[in-house]
Image 1 (cartoon, rainbow, N blue to C red):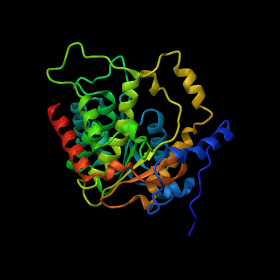
Image 2 (cartoon, rainbow, N blue to C red):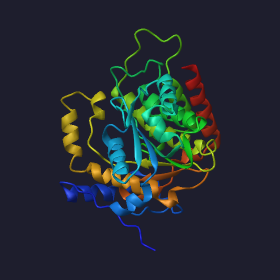
Image 3 (cartoon, rainbow, N blue to C red):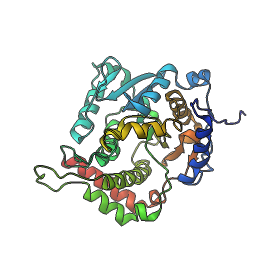
Length: 345
C-alpha cells in the first residue's frame, strides 16, 4: 500500500514556510490517530477520484474556495461555484449574509431548468463550504441583525446544509467539507466554557426591533467573536452528523495560509498590504491549497459515518476537534439556536 506523503508547497521562501509548518502543530488540537493522514495525490490520482462527479463550492469565486474549485474542475468534476460575483453557466450569484439569501440559493439550485439544477439533479457528490468573513467593526451586523462573522461563518452554513439535505441535493454518498480555522488549540481564557460560548453567541444578535442605526463594533470584540465562531463551527459540525442521512460524511479543515483581501474589512487600508506582505513568505500557492484540500476530501479515512473528522490541510493530517465539540448538550443547544435564528429571519 502506498504510504501517504506530504504535499510540498511552492513558495518564494521555503525556509520560512518550513518553519511555519514545523510550528503549526503547536496551534492545533492533537492528532486524530484513527483518521490518520491523507495521501498527496498526483494529477492522475485526482482525476481518478473526481472525474464524473458533481461538486458545489460555496464561496468559490475568491481565495481558498476558488483554489479548491479550480482543482476539482481540472480533475474532471462538474463544479457549480457560488459567490457574490458568480455568473452562469457554472456559477450562481448569492448573498449569504441573510437566512433568506441562503434559502433563495437552495431554491435556485433546486430549479431543474437552471444551469446549476442540471448539474445537481442527482445530488452533489461533494459540497465545499468556504464562504467566510473577517470582522467588520464599522458595520458589524447583517440586515437580519446578526454579527456578520456568525451570520456567514456559522448560520449560513447551517441553513445551506440543512436545506440542501431537505431538498435532496446531497448525493447518497456525499462528502461535505467545511473550511474554517477548525481544530484550533485555543486556551480557555480565550474561548471560555460552554456557558461563555452561549453568552457570546447570543450577544452577537441584536434585539428586536433592530436599532436604527445599528451599533458599531471594535477590532478586539470582532476578533474574539471570530475565535468563538471557529469553536462553535467544530461543535456545529459534530452535531450535524446526527441530523444528516447516514451516507453523508462531514469533515472540516484548518486551511493554512493563502494571501487574500478578506482582512480589508477589519484593518485600516494602509495596514492591509503590510499584513499581506508579512504573510506572503509563509503562505502556500493557490495550487497547493487546492491540491491539499482535494486530497483530504478524497481520503477514505475522512469518511466516518455520523461523526465529523477535522483536518490540518497543509499537513494532510487529521486533528481532534475542540474539546467542546464533544459536549452533546452544547451541540444540541447550538443546533436549536441556529434553527431559531433561521426561522426568525
